[in-house]
Image 1 (tube, rainbow, N blue to C red):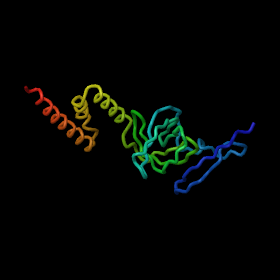
Image 2: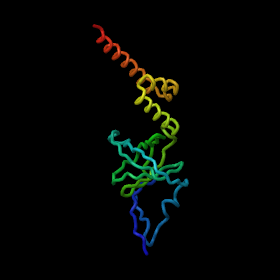
Image 3: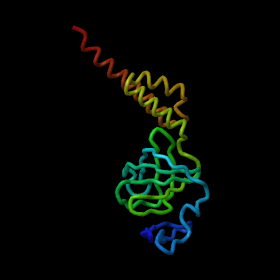
Length: 179
């Protein structure tokens, strides 16, 4: 029984758009055989953020396999992805990626360099966000201080500004108690 063929569009290292056919009776070298690193099947929720054009464009996706060099994502709907994306794995690492290929709802993304945010830091940030939601600004800021603001000057300034705004708001509202 012949398998159905799948058209896959990809961009080679020179930036040239190409198409290959996988499956059917005359199967070329499969993508799995061309990979530089073995992949592990997983399911993780993530977001892809467009780096080009409108950086506010964000799509939810599932990471369905990963390796040290990249991931396979399923976007759930056909989307015309730009060449460069930011991949934010929920509660984990954040990567700058290059779209290597796409077909229908799936895309192969190659990591460009080291993670922007490591998996450990991403997890710790999520814990501090949870503290902020449950215990408030002061408790979250204490955790950020212990984490040295993850070495991020912008985060440090945002925390200082938020604490100062909280103190001003508290001061103004507490004056209404005076009778």
